[in-house]
Image (cartoon, rainbow over all chains, first blue to last red):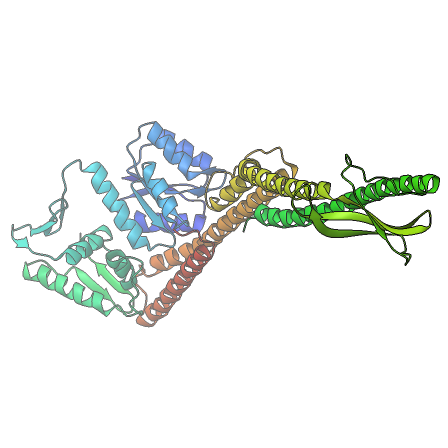
Length: 227
Length: 278
């Protein structure tokens, strides 16, 4: 699956490509308006990550062009502008999601995965990973043996987040931001994340799955699926 | 109190005082002229009496047709000739009347008489009445006219002023419409509108610049933060990181989180200060 990263900051663009490239994604980059326009016209992408403040043109125009030509790519806007008007403006023009800088790469990964799921599965909302079968629309989880695994809402979101960032280290604070939003301030203590992860891990192992969640000491967690 | 109500009050008070003063002056002057005329009349009569007495040695008969009241009294003591205003009974009108009289001593033959010639001051009452009533009338007309002018004309004259004030009141810094002052032919109001328009436009421009600045400042800070955070996100993927290195990275994460929060708080403060919230 191909992604297009339209971002004028080369360092950031590189980081995004490296991170998402570890998955099944192939990343292409465009650093300015013209290059982005050219690539949009030449290729089809599964998802476009778009910075709206570009040299020599606005990302909003690119988005408008995409929608005018009836392209079906999912568009995720990344922007330093965090105001409500900018978000509404971007989403009104047909973007699928809006992420304000600075963001965690894991959060970006989860959102890109969500957009691609929505765009490319066309009603088939079932994801099968190793021993797990997730139904996104029903928000249910079964093991491949057919056994239902009951999860709370947070546990389900957590699992989906891990799956979207599988085999990569996700920090505790990235998890907190994803599950509880940016506004939450837990005084730098993320112990409550630990209890959620402990419960999720227990439920998965009880259903006969291997222990997917590995703690990376001092940093966070990793959802490991050995292929 | 409205400006013109106040102005009108002062104006009316002054007009009233001036009118009363001028009426008094008018009365005094006319009074003087009339009395002077009267005195001359009396003097005329005196001349006639004198010439009659000198030629015939007798005093003339009292005139019947004239409204003069003439008295002759035999008197040895000469009196100085003098004019005076007195009150006495008027047999024609059957009531007390004011008279102007001339008293002097007249010799007729060997006798000496005190002659009193008096004429009623009827015209003066009328004069006083006329002046008082006309003054009151003029005063009433002035008050009426000024009230009418105040109500009909001044309200319309001041309309542009109130329109401008309303336009300023409805003006919002973050709004999109220009203030829009109505055109007016009155120079002062036009001058005021022109200046108000300039001030409001400048204020809005400054406000827009400030707003853009706060957003741009956030952009400039957020982008490097995004780069640092993404690089750290990549760094922790490294399998060979030791535990102590992980701790160092964790501290770096927390610091970035703090800068990012601080930046957002500052932006929020700036927004609240600019009243651009939400």
